[in-house]
Image 1 (cartoon, rainbow, N blue to C red):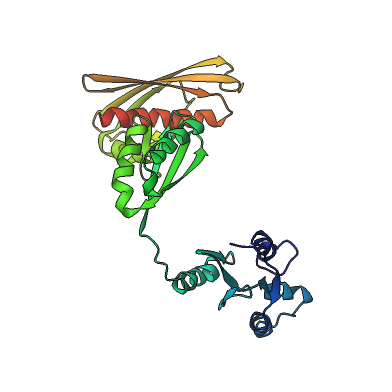
Image 2: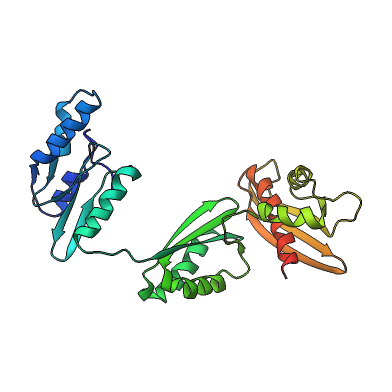
Length: 291
């Protein structure tokens, strides 16, 4: 996908031909279409546009009704290589045509999400990989993205396999999942504190959590807050302004006569650690609420 334009860095067609041991040929129908498209837009035709008429030998061409870059399908044995331009409005119709051309029907797939906290990205990935390795027939793929203080997991799997895989991943990430919909702990807590109210004694986030609380008017007027949180931090080697070492975050959440305590060690990466501390406080409150 991509790299089918007219410039010297558009090398996809030539790279694919080389990888398959094929030569290239200029296809007149593609060149005629490029010329028509450019002329209709009153764009001067440049000699380099001829690159867009070059394709691996034996290609089945995929016309482009929305641009100058035609795609192609090359069959090698029982496999099919499909070349597509990058823009979605151009490549998606071509992909459908390519699949129709070989009688392929896409498998119905689902996209699942987990937002985790408290584990480094390699550990999250290793746990997910272990689940997928134990279920090789599922053909699922996972992606991981570090968005401090979170590690996000995205799973693409056939619909028939999603319930089983989701249960296995939930088990492998038990105690570390903040949300399943991509929202942060603060975003989730907003709905709760608007109903119950929350007070904070914050010696950890240096006011970041209180700023969020004030912006949500989180303590309903005229009645006591239902959640009381005390947050503290121990800075090892560095400090909130000297970003070295790590910080041990602690949060004590009291609801009525019941108190829950949570702890998390985090690298002292930079100023964003205080934002991470506010998210940790919110996550602590959510865990206490959902016990």
